[in-house]
Length: 330
Image 1 (cartoon, rainbow, N blue to C red):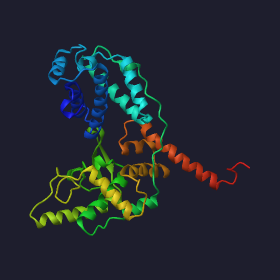
Image 2: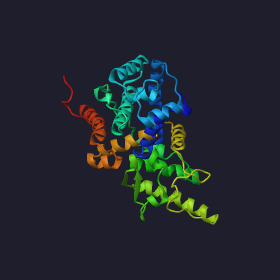
Image 3: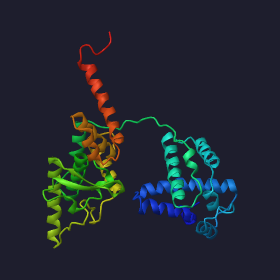
Image 4: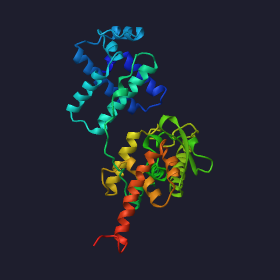
């Protein structure tokens, strides 16, 4: 099944995710791919070809007739879900990928039930597989310093890149959040910034002195360039722009980070998210309150932040074993 033959039922659900739940385009695409896989399975099993007009009529009438895929999805029972998951299991997906696909189906069936499209929700009988806890990867302060000092900030693009890297480490924000920052999101002193996180939730985060210095240097260069052309940046314009003046993309930021990792002779597997992990780990290493770190990271649940305590506890244990004269067993 390709984009031109996506069921209206699936399209409506994906629109709900982006318009009402404010999911990112990337997350929406992942949900769409998972559901396309489910529909492909239904097509193969039933031997029914998708006819978009018939499918739309089935949705409009909430028909559960077996002669459409829409009808089969609406009346789907738990045995069919289990068969689909068993087929996926044969493809050796990781536990994390399986968990995501189950989460997609769970959200989809819950939405259908709530909209009155499906009589029951078979996903209430499906359990999510347990996943091994993966500790977030963090790098040392020394490595962070090497990365942050890599850009040449004597020109406007280098100054922008230095300001981005400093902002990422100073605030712990996500790449999607840093590219969404507008000029007006900086407060009057520039020491605090408004961040729009997942689900369009806003939070205010402080900026450290190094990030503030890098931002002021970058903005001074931007303002000078605009003034030379008789222009000025307004509050609604993107803070970080590309060479054509448009909003910088998340992909561009990731490419820039990869470039400076090479220049700083650092592990190429380090990502912008590693900078976020390092921000949280370094704060907790130095005694920051867990709740405060939760707020700064924009985590809804404290449990999402607590994973960093495992990392810092491990370091604490290593330090204890090395330093305490009676730490090691004889």
